[in-house]
Image (cartoon, helix red, strand yellow):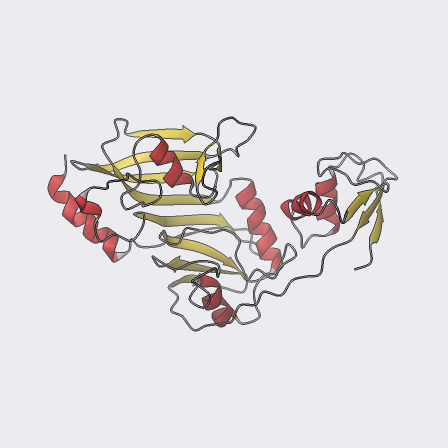
Amino acid sequence: MMPENLTVSSADAGLRLDVFLTKSYPDRSRSFFKNLMEDNSDLQPILVNKRPPKAGLILKEGDLVEVTLPELKQVDVQPVELPLDILYEDNDVLIINKTKGMVVHPAAGHTDDTLVNAILFHCKDSLSGINGEKRPGIVHRIDKDTTGALIICKNDHSHNFIAEQIKAHSVHRIYKGIVYGNIKEDEGTVNLPLERDRKDRKKMAVARDNESGRPAITHYRVLERFRDFTYMEFSLETGRTHQIRVHMSHIGHPLLGDDVYGPKKPKAFSKGLTGQTLHAEKIGFIHPSTGEYMEFSAPLPEYFKELLKKLSATSL
């Protein structure tokens, strides 16, 4: 693509470069431009006064910003008719109750049985496609074996609007989970930054310092105590990858059934479980068109309710 030249006006002087770019290109996010500058330094898709800049550069009046955006990538994913448990739908958003074992994005071993395949079939052409790639509606994720409420965006305005709420930590998210052991406190907070595990890049870990990690805050509350387990409610201020799973494992109470962050020799009670016992029960946000707060609840899956029934015999 040919570069587009933008001259910084007096009204925009003092803005960070990434803020200026999202103002100039409202269908792209700040993280998109930040990644573009970091990942394509040799190609220099963004120049300020003919030099490659940092995303946080403070602009001055008269600065020349040259922007060469990459072509929008088409995602080679086929629509597939798969069952969806729809909690709510309108012209802007689709709220689904994701089932256990459903992968969000196609990957090795999962090419035509993912959430993306399903929503492509359900929504047809009405989905967001921002950040340089037609990513059908996905504004946030939950893990394959985590169940519960998930937002799908049906246009770019909705995607950007909700993404900003997620970034500002204003999306209300409540999870339910069963953890190993009996937590002493009735409620508490884990405030520890997370980073990629330095030995296993597929895993996350508590960061060695604040500089290398990203802030992560999980509030928890005990709902019911059993002999060997605790039924918990989690409220997220941030939504980092595997956040609840890593935080709870770090404080000595990993999620029941978690074969990544759980004990190497799990208790017999976890036999037959597929992954962590974690459910995204509630999600609340400001609607992108009406400006009203909306909240949705996803009922506990049957396997989870059956577990609670069995554990109730050991209630403390």
